[in-house]
Length: 197
Image (spheres, rainbow, N blue to C red):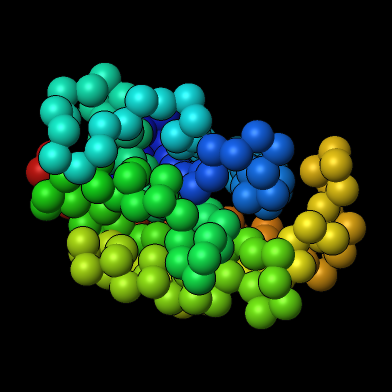
């Protein structure tokens, strides 16, 4: 379901890095904080470092895989955040997508993208590839992905963003997804519920 009985919209945020102290997590913290500002939203952080997801072709009877499917299945929208590694999105992000099965639990869901990279052009390559994969499994990938360049100088060691303009862009990813969900997903679900009553 898109909305719980208490009326809250669920948003899942997928952290695409398991490296300790990673910069992707610092950007995700801003997204989570922005979502927390909305009283009608419940945000679920999907952190693969806390999960034991099987590789493709291995047994899919993992409790982590089941929990992942449950969390993303209940979400009205999803935000994927990935670092750029060797010109592509992280293997951890791909592992999350693979563990959603086929047809994918992302099919028909609105998805927003956030990428971080140390280089000067940001995570453009990884975001293009991630958009392609997510579209292929049926996700509705929203326009306006956020790419953070030179990420090592954007956040301090405590995770504070040192650039107000970049912080605003990262936070806007959360509000943009919420706007889409409120305008397009929730009215449709409410209408379906009315018809069934």
